[in-house]
Image (cartoon, rainbow, N blue to C red):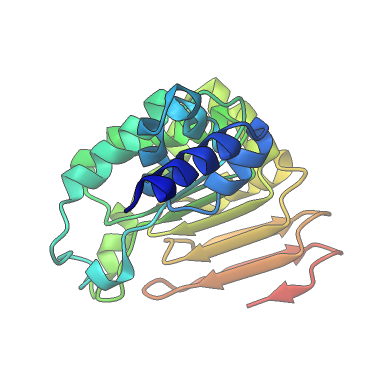
Amino acid sequence: MCVGETKMCHLLQDRISELPDDVLLDCLSRLEMKNAAQTSILSKRWRYLWTHLTNFDFDPDPEELESFWQIKGYDTRKYFAWINQVVTVHRGTCIDKFRVHTRYVKSYTAQLDKWIKFALSKRVKELVLDLIGSNLQCAEHCSLGYPLEYVVLTHPPCYTGITALQSLYLCYVNVSGEFLEILLSHCHHLERLYLESTPLSKFKVKSSKLKYLSIIMRFHKLEELEIDAENLLHFL
């Protein structure tokens, strides 16, 4: 690269850095989280900018996912450590989306609890817990899924934080119909609810705001379902 091109690059970088925070954050939000974090080394101006992002999509590269029980070339511990780092340094007051896609291992329950507490304390609008793979064969594993309701009901800030939810997706998460009914009664803005491989037997859906409802039962039979949602547009 010639001297002229180098000067032009520096000039361009300086001009970008002079943009308002909201514009730069909008640019960073279009990057993958790890790439956005790497901008912290550019200059002091960029060092903490990414820690104010509002979209958290911790999705491993699809090409790396081989199955539920084995992730080819992927270290689950590094994945958890990366999320813990992001959660710890975040400086924003609220977040729009928090998505986790990983296999659930009981020994990591405390880590998941920490993430849920973080997301709900930031009044997250869209919460996605995708904790299952396509090769799961044993029905009993669903009842051993992540116990979401325990951390929500026993941690007051979480119980308060659920009121901001607009979209909730739970896969391989152990929740009861009673808990979901409590959740719906407090989530006055919830418009989308997606449940997959949850060990439900009875569920009463009562919501004036819910527009989209999806329930996929792979290993358990939903014996009783009652829906009272006048604004429901889609049900699967």
